[in-house]
Image (tube, rainbow, N blue to C red; front, side, top):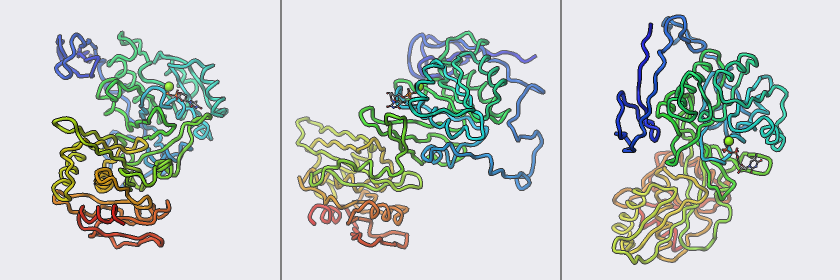
Length: 455
Ligand code: TYD
Ligand code: MG
């Protein structure tokens, strides 16, 4: 007989401890450790092995690769983030702030998922009628879509048994309730147990499971940290509440890259894909105004153009204020120091604010130069040419270093109608320069500022 084990979880941060503590050692919160009796792991005949898994070791070369395992969700932008479509038998966690559009996205893909497959959509948040209203609004009415409004895990598993779906959608993991565990829905141990049941279901029967996960006030997925280890993909749905644009990115993906982003727009009939994100990110760009420069960064395999804005103003504090939105703060401070020392911009007496338009996070070396140029432009009160894009990494001596995928970036720059582009002097690639695009190859930041501000 397998023994049960008692562990304690912090309801604030999910920290696990073998014994009770008055104060969580990880987050410092008081009286948050709650007891959880771990069920013994199934052993022997009861244990489930994932579909296609055998209990004897096989040679890698003898295992057949099955291409049919992947299928499209009908939304190219979601397929891209999943690594080229959903994988049968995988468990995908979709998380994001309330109202961002998680339920809308998952209900919307049902239309296409239902061609030749059966989908069971379980909601613990909305009633069947509410779901029907939403489905009507976004034009979802496939015949093989089953709806269940339920939070009890055992009833959900019974429905799965009855409907035999190929795809199960659960909205959300925090509302589910496993009767064998007496803590409240949404508690760390409930979330863990319910995810474990869904994981066993997906791996033993080959059902693809999409699960919605809420986030806590720090922007992390609410629940135990192990949740992210248990699932195959963790997708974050992000966006600024004031704009209709939404970005979908993968924080973890066992079947693809985590660099890809998907871009959507929330409209009155649900989410629409934005296949051309550069155009969206550059919309309404002020032309001829100082303090803005266009960057071209790689988001996975796709080059994306985005506008960087900077405001440099005389500081009235002893220590000047700096903020960076959409760009790494420490990198921004470093670029300011390089600009001061190597290009003669006396930024240390000025406050500086950096913002990337459209909610994009520019975490790629190629974004250094446009950020530095936006700062220089605001400092000198001289606009950067509105038809110019800057690409390049900045080193500590002020040199402009080469970046990868330059040809792909230049093609995107030309496609969006830009006429000039500043790039690093040295580049490993053999360049194919598009027609109608003038290239300026610069060695250091000083040269780049000369080109960008004095042309
Ligand atoms: P929802 O998918 O319910 O968000 P989540 O499940 O992430 O909490 O999306 C709710 C928001 O989306 C709500 O503010 C209204 C908006 N919305 C539209 O603008 N158009 C639509 O067609 C739908 C269905 C929702
Ligand atoms: Mg919802």
